[in-house]
Image 1 (tube, rainbow, N blue to C red):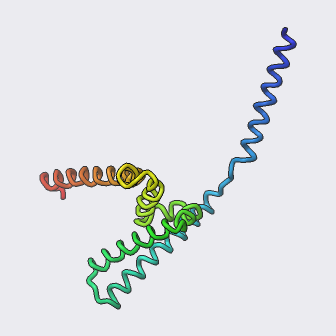
Image 2: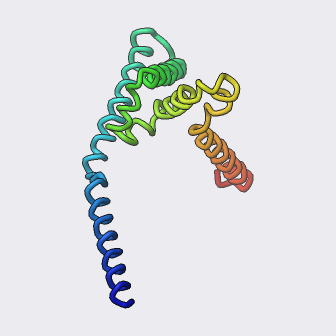
Image 3: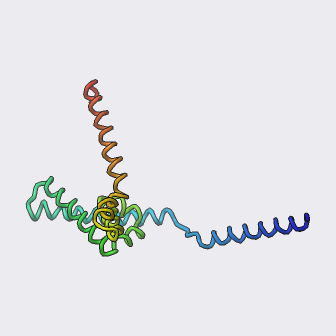
Length: 162
């Protein structure tokens, strides 16, 4: 009986060792500095594109700074949504990581990709109810943080420190 238990324990250890080796083989290895550089490059390119739009809008079209900034944001969101629909932006996200997800283009990508994913469920129960699945928490916490900081500024102005 103890011989059988010892054999079963040895077999179990062998299976666990094989599993650990399998996990080591299939788990992707990432270089954090390399990924950070790619995110920096892609995020920088998005910002350069935004700056170019801003420059053209103010210098060439003669718009004031605020109007040009609004147009810049709208165009970046439009380009991001179009690239998401063409399945190009998700590839940029895979390559550039946070460099593609952090700017306003990442927010537009999250809304557009949810709309595309759930369109087969219909306009109301699919797109309408799921479009802000990813972006909803961003909106919620952004509004809450703005509200909390507004209260802090208001209290600061009441006591004279702001």
